[in-house]
Image 1 (cartoon, rainbow over the protein chains, first blue to last red):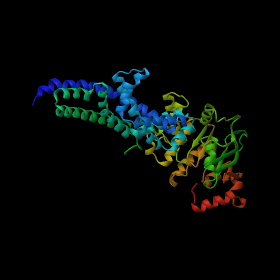
Image 2: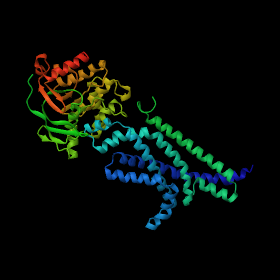
Image 3: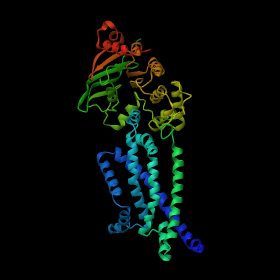
Image 4: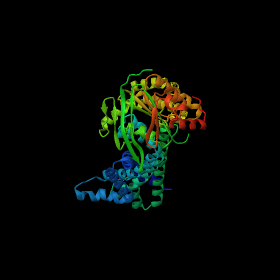
Length: 221
Length: 255
């Protein structure tokens, strides 16, 4: 086996790509989740106009392919005088897309919170906003965590679309080598392995988080 | 027992239609400082709705509410939130915050609404929990408490806000019979300590011994009101007596 191809060419390039992938995934994951919490809350409890706007956002970003969103952000926005570099366009695209999906998980869990929780807080003089922040959302997030974790795992994999708008990450680096050497099988098997490791690590962290946030009465005893 | 006659809460002509049905038909009542008024009546009479209209958890369609001399303008959010801090509410199904332990359940409103420091809120919460006999349960979560303990935490939570009046919506109805006593004894201590309260309940024995006035509700109206002695005695020939004796036939209560 040609180990020099792996050690001198493929692995260094993929490691470089991996760093870029992580730079894409971490901010997109964190900000996307926060956006999802806000949008999910507005979709559930917002006033009519706000709710319609938030629903519109979710419909748009869940209803169109991520590739289309990325192309429009990178190649379309300059028509409006907005220039995003490839990295920024990719992160913005990922945040908007994952936020839309997260909002659905959050919405589902918000709907499962009993009305009494809201009444009890209101009866002590909590404003609606404080009721949401201190009482309702902390419970909803715990219930939504498995679903949101799922979305973060998706994000890790769809971050591979960034190379299409010239933000060269893990898949992009590999693709270039594969094209040059025509060794698609080896290259993509290694890329697949990299993603598998990333997802496994993310699952581990998410599981730790679930345990950390666990409270008697939420989730399994 | 003589109590100073100064209305602390006045409610006038509350009307509420929910789902096309008239739930409250112009209900009025007033409450003097230190009084315990008990709302009784069949389910569906409007007792819960009335209590929730008093603190605007359900905004009444018509009617006015005064706390001491001030009329509550429920459209002004700030006034409404300030008013609710002075009116404690106890729910039938406790409504403890499920993600917070007993201590945090009591402390959170002190911190978020009364803006107390974390330490001051904690100290105050511990004191309130001790007062209801739960000093050794402060770190337990609602899912780890019995029904009676949950209701006592919820009473401590309301008391921590130092309310001027308390509204108690069937506080023992969701409890197993053997747990009712511990909650009633906390409420009895409150009444004897001079807390002003409106209590919706089916505990007739408790009502007889502690209520200053009984309000009997049916079909969205207060149809009888008077002292427990007048209303709840066999020779009163009252609708209240009739109702209570039928309740007693169902189960002999121990209080």
